Length: 166
Image (tube, rainbow, N blue to C red; front, side, top):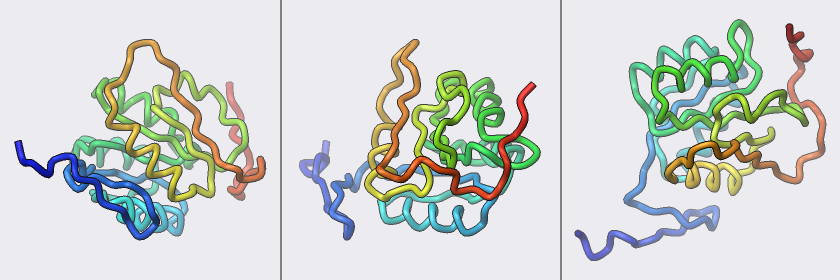
């Protein structure tokens, strides 16, 4: 064991980051600018982005290719939403760690998605860092997914209308 294994670094944003716990992160968001911003933020948290995709189906395929440590996935995407993609990924790999990101104030069924956290848009860097750090914690059975929110006003930041549910 290296004597500096527990060494913590402070990033430019003032967050504690471990140089020994770099995660591989997959990002799925249908808005290219959001995906790019999230990728930059993941880098500021000293983690590696393996790929940025735009749909739930692409997220499933990219997960199979890369087997990332964490998936950051938009809650609402066309064709296949984040919840369905999250459930599919978890069905194939029960140890997967998915963090959903929502521009809506009250996501439907967060506890049923299997996600380990839900972040509200716009995502604040300290909230993302905390969620990524928590993502590597061992998962406890039957523990509901935490909802991590920030002080952002409770309004939709996406331009899309809510999807109808059956």
